Image (cartoon, rainbow, N blue to C red; front, side, top):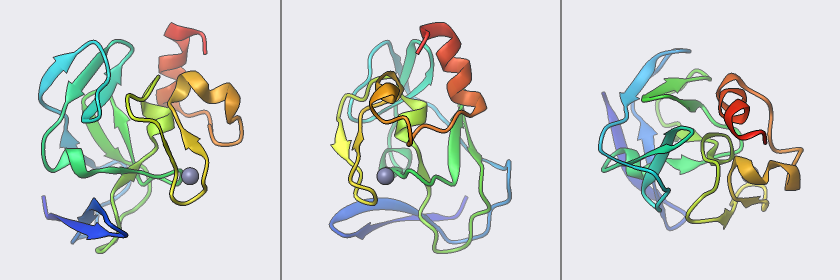
Length: 138
Ligand SMILES: [Zn+2]
C-alpha cells in the first residue's frame, strides 16, 4: 500500500502514489469498536464505529469521493491516479457526525446521513447508505 500523508490548505490528507482500480480494497478498517461516533471514528454498520489510527484517520471528506466504506473494507469507487487525494463522503458513511463541518469544496454542512433531508441534493442513493437506511428509516 503506497500512500502518503501530506498537508494541503492547512489540512492533512491521504494521497495515492500509485494507481488503484475500481473495486480494489484499499484498507481493512481495524481498531477499537464503539457504539458512538468520535472525531476519529469511522462508522461500519448501523451501530458500530471504529476508532481509527494513521493513516485512515487522515482520510478527508469529499462530496465527490473515490472510495467508500463497505462494512470493514475501504473500496475504490472511482479509479485513483498517483497524486489523487483519497476521500470518502462522510454524509454517506456516517449517521450523525461527531464533528460537523462545512465542506471546503461546496460549502454545505456535512452532518451525516441522518440529516440527509436537509441536503437532498448532496445525498445520492448508493448501496451502502440504502443498507444503512433500512435499519434507521432515514
Ligand atoms: Zn461538498
